Image (cartoon, rainbow, N blue to C red):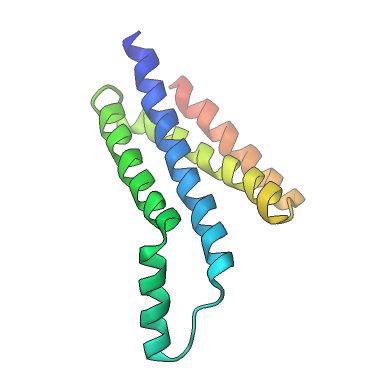
Length: 124
């Protein structure tokens, strides 16, 4: 059971990290491009920091950090850390679904290498 919880903490770390990336992209698309004038930049950033969804991304990052600390109390870093690479897989898939970003052959090949790396490092 202890080992199951360790993997669960790593899984939560990945999920909260991916949530933050997808939600930040969503909100930035809504906010528009970063302005060039200094006073507009300040206002732009202030609006972002008042956006509850952006704040939820910060909360997600904090929760991901807490989950990672719990995982690190139970697993070796060199064993657990490669699993965080699963965030690359999830972000690629979700960015295609939500933002219609292309999934190219090069991206698939890169993800295949990442997954192979996770499998290989989890064996040793």
